[in-house]
Length: 320
Ligand code: SD4
Image (cartoon, rainbow, N blue to C red):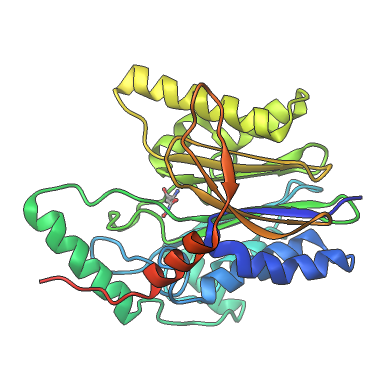
């Protein structure tokens, strides 16, 4: 069986590079997903996942994460959890529970505490600066702070054909306390069935949920579509429907992988990046163009793009 992994955004590439080595040696897709997502969660300069994640309107970091095993359809998820370093590991642990496998807020925290997960203050000084800057530039001027998106979502297939999906995010920057996005919601932020494939989303959770879009992509793949075709169709249809019914669609960006190791992506924004590694492909970052005529095109990120990205995430945060 061909192993492969696809993930939203450039930020996933270090994680999938490491996890890809394990998959090449016959490792389990679930271990690969957890390892790769933990790498993203632990890195303070990825500002919308885990440590260093962007805070809510009260300047508190509340994290959402999910884990789904495509063989058993087991799902574990946490919503709005605070002060734990690796929400993905807590979500995975919950996926082994028959009942109570999706916990939020204080309940998720006491479960994590009881199970011995590492506590950590997830709010960094840099995230506080991002908050202050955003506050000045938007809230103080009466503007909406809600733009941009950066959830890490990924799917892996291993040499034994087992598939797993996972997500982790600090969600919408400046969200209301207690707000939960699509990322821990089955069928919206992720879905995975080893008999078919999996999909995962990033973008505006409130709109992604309106289309249960990750499930929709898996459903289209089950009907025989290639992941690329399924992603393009689902994103175009949801984008157009939201535009028609509501006047506009929020950001919708999806990645998908089938159980043959074939992958696809679609987005309604310019500049969505994603990372891929497989038996036949070195770890690679691609950058998408916006969908046109229902088709998403992408190209390998250039050296300049990759360098500019690194400069951007490390650059000092300034505001008057
Ligand atoms: C959410 N889909 O919570 C996520 C947001 C996102 O920053 O992609 N990230 O709605």
